[in-house]
Length: 439
Image (cartoon, rainbow, N blue to C red; front, side, top):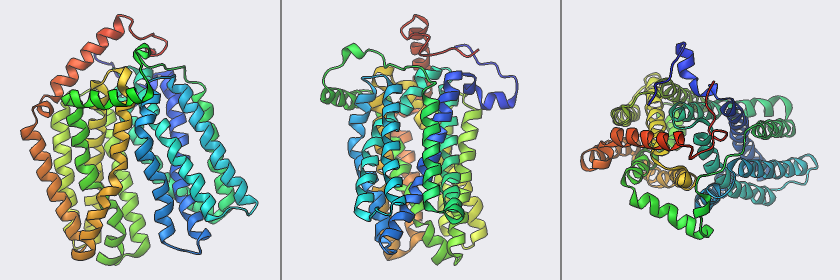
């Protein structure tokens, strides 16, 4: 493979932005994600107000989003592998604007109530699984495999940035301009995302002529993952931090208020530091995207994540916990970016949407990990719960490494896949209009 040439460190960091199509896609993704992250907070505040400050409403309004995302994801992936992914994203983004616009109209006309909010929020939960796999799959169509590692890392960096800034900005806007105006600004951002996506070229998946029924495509997606050990192992390996350690974020409120007695401002600081750590980790992967030592970095990052999270759980001081949670999120962000990129590199385009939908389902499983962790925290304390989860994650990570030949061959498998698919692209399997070359 031809190595990319970088004019500077900054050029190395943002290499994939050389692709004009990816720039428009990135603008669309960031505008949409910023609005979506902001609206998670706005909907929670709305639910809290509409139910006369019932804390249970906060769980309900997030539950009705999470469950449809988990159930509908395989269907969304199958659709993303059958039609123009750009058209699918445009259709879903338009539907999201209509849904949020209806909430905005009911809000300003004082007709919004909690049941209606739940119904419209649940509809969003149905829409997102059709768009998210397509958004991930289209990246490879736009930049090709040469720029995929950097593009995926930049995508994660942007998502981490919106995760930090979106809710903060929404909270400030609600305080200064009110709920209705905040909703209107979010709708404008959704519109910007839609307009930028219109500048992206059509992106059809490979081998559409092989398609069977939608149900058959869903079954084929599961069968592909089951029959291809490298992909299957990476998907399952990615569940280790997702199910065991990532749910620790739900217990940050306990650490802030009960363990270190820092109140709500302490919780805000912990969340901000964790978000910045995730951003830093993603930026590092984007800068070092050309490295082929993925296995070494994946193992180092997941083990370092477990170790720093374990130290965080037993920290007696708030100030010591801040750098620990920062580095914990740096390491888990590195691991997730490397894991996701390796999966993208290993899979052919005709099944990309379905595999991305399974990856999305794994993220949706995170709430399941909160149940046992919360139970342990109730009976034995939050520090004990996080410590146990961290120890289990460290042990399972080592088990995966020593007992999975497919994982140990990760670097060889990804290099072979890059060479194989690069040869297919050079022989014209994919139209150059759909995989533009950076100039």
